[in-house]
Image 1: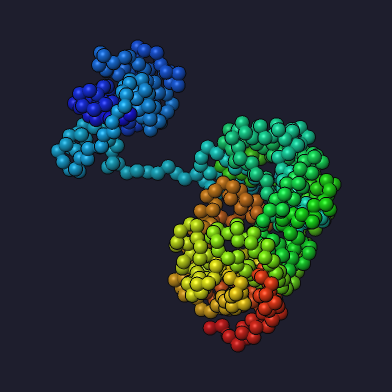
Image 2: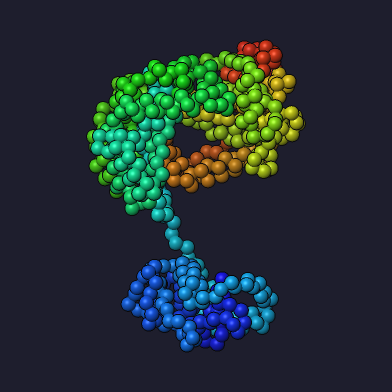
Length: 594
């Protein structure tokens, strides 16, 4: 069914159907123009009853229609022009023009500048394009931070739109665990039974608000976040306050989540997940940052309900918590925080929040049996492809609190990486150094990526990749060569491209409300304030090639942390971390910076 509209004399004509058999409806030009070209709502009314979906209004104008047509009413109130047009077309199709089995008609193309085109536009009131357009002033996006008497900090950033994001960040994570795996279970116990609400009530409330709630854990933080329309902000703050101030941690909930974790780990897991935990254990030992972020099934019997309660009572205190909001009024958020989070203990924990990590380094090689190789082959994206060897090498890097964090971030972007098999199409990172010097030069390399994992007081910079078992030792040499290439002179064009890419990625990420909330919380925990995007951009663009060389030399002058997962025959051919360090040290001393 098709609705056509055109000008004829002093009226706008609407027709359903073809030629003389079509049904027509006429609307005065002055009325149609003010409706189609203005955001002011306009109401139409006649003698017939209105459809149930219409909104009534005291003012109305009547349609002119053929006597054979049934009378009807189209009423619009408080709706935008595009919505009005869609409603008009839909209602006219169903009620005014009851045409059966209409045949589609190709639109008649009118050459630009022709007499017909001129006639169609004649006397049609349009927007005055000669007048200069003044954009609406941009909302002040300055982040506001308020510290309550209890020590609880509240930060917010105004953003346009009808929705908002609220986040509660607790300054404690897996690095603060006494029993490994507590935070992984605590994350899963988010939005469960509280003192005044059951799990069903919480879930039902979130569903009625069409809210999206999530809890997560990391090595340094526990996050609870909700996306919702601004109208529901008070109710969301009440639910978050219940979960942070008075959770019950029922034994049945704890047992249920432990069973879920065990079932999850009984399935095939990508080696990159457990290799990351092994890498951190090699780098920082079995305490602090070396604690695994994932819950090991072997640790589940050691975790009791009281361990979760002890962690909660120790670290869920007002001075350790930051509440952030994106797209909310700051004063309203502060008032709601005082109301619903006022029961939090105001005393900071006596335990050291971040024990100073000490870098160690070392190597770990695990042989892949035939059964594991077959399972990994089945879950790989390339159907039928052989299972590769996995390799990860990392060095200590500048932490978040150091000025060299910006050269290290630019260096990671410049190194880039990619994979020979891409589900997103070609073109991703093809100008990065690893893509150009490794993937282009060595066709047998499956994938290789640079990563930079930074924390408040420590960081790791390294390479992760996959290659066939037969080339695993050669792949190690390629990785070492890529590390040594970081101390070479950098091309200015490549350096500027990496800076632009880093800034672009940062800005696009911060456009998301959840990412903005997390960034505000992390910076408040780390610096007590939030650096603006302009400040960060200035520091990124101030990085020079010699800064990257200096940071790279400093990183490589340490014992590496190496994790290799390959088949049994080739696992015996992997050199130790000490042998790799000796080679790097000799090369660095013979290669002086230019």
